[in-house]
Length: 523
Image 1 (cartoon, rainbow, N blue to C red):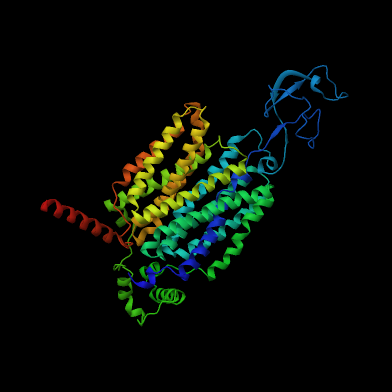
Image 2 (tube, helix red, strand yellow; image 1 turned 30 degrees about the vertical axis):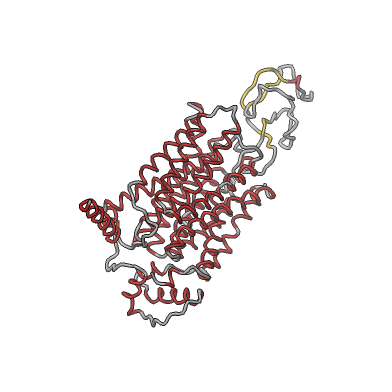
């Protein structure tokens, strides 16, 4: 491979910083509902006894364990409006609430009056995930059709749509804006990952995935820290969505992938990008490159001839590509499903919601280092198989640990979180390397779709506790085990070049089959 594309230097560092800068704020927008639409403490308001400005801490009926926050005690028939309300003014009968007193107005629950309607609060995250699903696929197509750079910048700037939510006066208007915001911004993840992979050398692909994941974790941690000091949701929203406007400046810094430029007939632009890369990395070369040297460029970049753009029919008629889509989608689904599932089901961890969120994020960092070490030293395939298998074992074991052994449950949770974090990054890198350049953006969008589906299902797993306390953990374990088995069907990609066409993928597998046949014949 040519030194210009293999050397990791100032050019790649600058591009990585710019892409990750945008990803940090897309991540914050992606999880905004965790705190902006978080639950609040509230109680029923007794309109006969108190105004809408009454204090949450002093209910007129005093302490009554039979009264929850969605019901109120009924006043005695002997009570009259000339009397003040005391605990003796109420009977033992209760009725549903018609109005509420909120402890604070820090989330939309108070401003949109969503008390005792948990399904509406949970639906916000689901609707956001639906928008992300659409965005992942559309942005993958955009990245293949118009380029990696415009897809990334469009989606990062798209987070600005979140500002509109602060003006929403009804619940359904709010979730409509939430869906639109996610649709505009979510595609930055696959497009940004593709761009980072394609401007790096073969040895830096995994590093690209790890740094990309760190940008996500930094965004999650930063959001928790900001929310600690700015709890009011409208102010918080304005703070986290404003950087999207600043990210417009990235159009002057981020460069397009030269691989994409060459594959789409933009040879002149590819030459300029390669020259800038060489100059920034202080690489001297004597080659006088012109547009007529397109074949030489493609050869040095290991890009095969593509006189006709490969369509969906050709891509999806290849059995090898279909198998890789299955494995890529399954690994991304399980990584996301288990990762977020463990986070949501970690209710035994100590501390407030901000601390818990930070702790969950911090536990992901060592997982990335483990991923970087083993997948660079051993490869992609074996560490993923072993990682998913270990994670599955830990999940199933935690499901059967008695509730009295809290320390053991916490230990298994932390170990599982570290392992699935390493698998998360490995699955992203592996699926990226399985697909050819002509359809990498689109197929990565399909895998990202599967990942987002896992993210959507994870919040629903606590409902399974009504059936069995072990069922969620067993479900995580089975998902991990099935994924480990599926990965055995696809090849190792560590030392392979990034293939650019379906023909190259199929040819490489044919060579492997011929080698195996030759070895077995000799034996």
